Length: 242
Image (cartoon, rainbow, N blue to C red; front, side, top):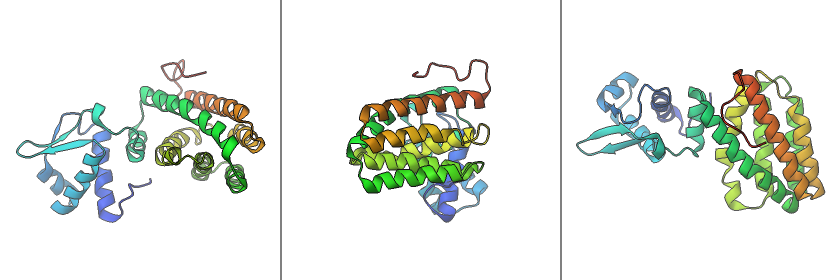
């Protein structure tokens, strides 16, 4: 499991408390007994305080003088934060969360592909090709296939030349990593190569319209794979963009 960016005891403490929130041990509005939590985790007050600061910054908890520390309502959580997305996947994403993430991708990524087709340079095309080759070599290796997929979509963001889109890498990377961890172990990653190749070739040709359509087809396939993995009658509830 990939840990929060903070290393050592600090990172482990952040992960432990986040897990308690996302698994429902601490629910929205619940007070957190900080002294009891410190004893339970076996960490210093300083280590726990620093961990709680991280979770406060991500909108998960709120500490008020004389009122204590509480889990904030979900509406306050920074749901576009990479760690928050990862923690949600680790705890078991619900259908609405998966649908919402798919819709975000459907809004953003076709435009990313189209913009990349107009702005990419030789170096960026090489990066996309290498990511696709890595994906091909990773057949059957879930972790490597996931890493290659994230690398491909990151390279697309870079190819847009748009600094704000590039900064979405952390969020989009977490979405892809979570989705791929669910899908690749069951469906497999080999069939994803042609859809990614179609995007790359359109970007290479400088054809923005075709790149957008290829990305839409890729995302529709990804959505259908997720349906299969969930194994529910009718798939994931809620209509995806088709």
